[in-house]
Every structure is written in C-alpha cells, then in structure tokens.
Amino acid sequence: MHHIQKDFLDATEFYYHYHDHAGPMIRLAEKMSHYYEEAFKLVLASPAKAVLWGANFDDMITYPTYFVKEIQPWLRKVGPAFRENGQVSICHCDGENLGLMDILPASGFQVAEAICPWPMTKVKIEEYYQRWRDRLTIFGGIPSNILLDDLTSEADFEGYLDSMFKHLVPGDRLIVGIADTTPPQANWDRLRRIGDRINKEGRLPLQAGQAVLVNPAAAAESLAGDPGRANPKDQYHDIRQMVLDGEDEGIAGEVEKLLQAGLPAREIMARGLVAAMDIISPLFKAGQVFIPEVLLSARAMNQAVQTLEPHLKDASGGVQPAAIVLGTVFGDLHDIGKNMVATMLKGAGFQVIDLGINVSVEAFIEAIKKHRPRLLGLSALLTTTMPEMPKIIASVTEAGLRDKVSIMVGGAPVTAKFAKDIGADGYSGDAGEAVELARRLSAAS
Image 1: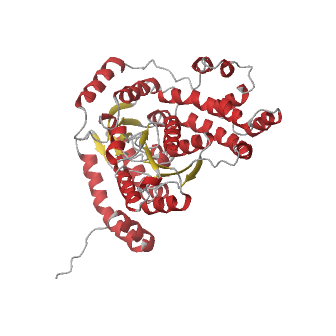
Image 2: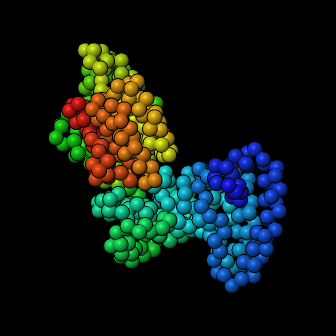
Image 3: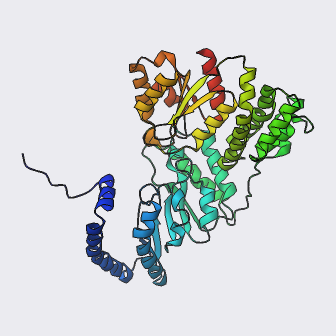
C-alpha cells in the first residue's frame, strides 16, 4: 500500500502546529507573504470598485489574540490603501463575533459582510448596529434559519422583522441580506416578503424607536386577574419590581424583610418572584424585552431564591423537589437560553443539575444514573448540533433508563415537530414555557 502524504492541515491540526511549531510556521508565512503582496498590488491596479479581503472570521476559530496578532496587521495595511484608491474593502464576518466586537471595527476595512446575528449566534443585530455603524457598514442581519418553516414559525418570522425595523434606527450604513446564504429548503415566499417590507418600510431615516423594556402599566394590566399582585401597595410589590428591574444586590435583604414580617416563603416565591417572571415572559415573547433584560431579572431572581431555599425546604415537610438534569448538547457552546431555563426552574422549586455546555452523550447518561432525575432537559442553539438530541434519547433508551426520565428539548432551532419526531416528551419555546412543561412532565411521571 502506498503511503498517502497529506498536504493540508485541518483546523485542529493547524492550531496544534501553531502552538508546537510556531517558529517554522512563522517562517513559512513570511515566505508566502510575497504572493499576497503581489495580489495586493494587482488589486490596487485593477478596475475593481469593491474588494473582498479576509473571510470566515469567527471568535471560536480566529479567536481574539490570534486575530490581533496574525490577521489584523494585514487588514490594517490593505484596508486604508483600498479606501485611498477609491475601492471599498469588505471582510466576510459570518461567524460568532462576540469576542471580536471591538476588534473588527478597528481593523481598517469598510464593510462587514454576511453578519449572522442572534438567534443563530450570540450578538443581536441591534447590538451590531449600535456598536459598529459609526465605523462599519453592516451587510446581512437576517439569519438563514428564519427562512425555514420547520425551524421558525410565521409569528416568529414576522416578529424578527418587526424587531429589526424597530431597533435599527436611523437605518443608514446597513445593507439587509441573508447570513450567510439562503438554504435550499428556504420558504421563498418569505424572501419575497422581506423584500416587500424593505421597500415599504425601509425609507431612510427609519422612524421607529427603541422598545419599552418593562412597561409598569402593561405589567399591572397583565396581572389584572389577581388584584393583590396588581396593587402597588401589596406586600410583594417591591420584590417583584426588583426582579423586573434586575436589582440583584439588594434583593436578598428584601427577602429577609418579608420573612421577618412573617410572610410564608412559598408565598414570597409565588407572588413575588414567579409573578415577576410571569410578567417578563410574555413581554419577551412579544419582542418588548430582550435577552439582556431577562438575564438581569433572572440573576436577581436567583439571588432571591438562594436566600429563600432554606425556608422552602423547611416548608416542604421533607418532600424532595423534582430533579432535572440540564445541559447544552455536545458541539454547542451556547448557554444563555439554558441558563435562563435553569434559573426559572430553580425559582419554580426544581432541583437543577446543570451540566453546562458541550455536554457529551456519556455525560448525560452518567448524570441520569447518579442523580436519578425525573426530567432531562436538552438545549441546542445551532442547527448543526440538533442531531445530538436523538443520539442522547437513543442512548438513554439503550441504557434502560428511558422509562425513568421524561425528556424535554428546546433552543432556537428546535421545534415541536422536531421534538415529536425524535421521541422527546415535550418541547418549550422559551424559559417560561420550559417551567410549565417541566411541571406537567413531573406531575405525570
């Protein structure tokens, strides 16, 4: 058999070599730079009006220290030269850019192309716009998964467009596009409707305004069925408002004050903490509050729950709360949604065993055997990691544990149909729904 010589490195091998053999790789790069210099001169002499130089930036691959050391010097060299030559310089930034948010705009190019925002990545399009529009033109902004019927409902599709027009004010230095490509199975009518809305609503400057984060009047109205909650004079008003405002530093003291006043721990939980999250959940679903605000509220609630926990145990009469093992599946490093679910489940009285992110099939099985939970919660944000979910369910079955645990799934690309198809017991579209689903599954188990 002939020996096959590999003349390329995959990404993992590249970084191993970059770490272990830095000297030879730097010398190789220096020898190759001559060809890039010649390409640079050719482009400057060409009639091209726009130049794509640099691609597939992503903070998990072109991580910040590597980007600054190895990539940014070239961009700072060619970008200004193209600009002075009357050419527009473009970089393809379609990946996860959270760690590069300050680095990319300082790199000398003019257009960031194929920006793929939340919910496929961590950064919302409005954050890109607010932080970049003074230095970069943004091309993209519409994640490809909202074109897929199986992954995005009609309501969520329209909601995304509503939010985009609402927040990208005044709308200059923005070229709307699909990031980073239109999938073959896209709903092509949605593409047409995006174009129709841009034609109808895209006249600059956009006149929309910022969303109201938490409207106290709307919050009170949403609780009209419970006069005690809606009344700002009731005993739980202050702690409820602290959760809504995300005030985590003083909330433990407010809990202690209510306990000292003789109010039951379970009432503080239900009428103070859970009631506040019940206000936030529909506002979040309607696009009136966003992930940062929900996380602040969840953090405040978590602080309050920690103070309440000993008293809740005393009030439980020795009854063990239902346990749930929770984790983001292997290959997926996203945790915002999973963390919100974990916090709200704790607030609802569940014992949460959070395995974190990038959790292997074996780790889920081991946790089920060790903790014997009633529930297993699986999260995925990337369409590429969704196939891990049926693998986990199959492994739970093979291990003889399937009849001992109910499995719930969620995450931005996950749908109720997908959950049913893979044999999960339930699906939730947000943290509030996850709590209700967990209660139903726990009661039925």
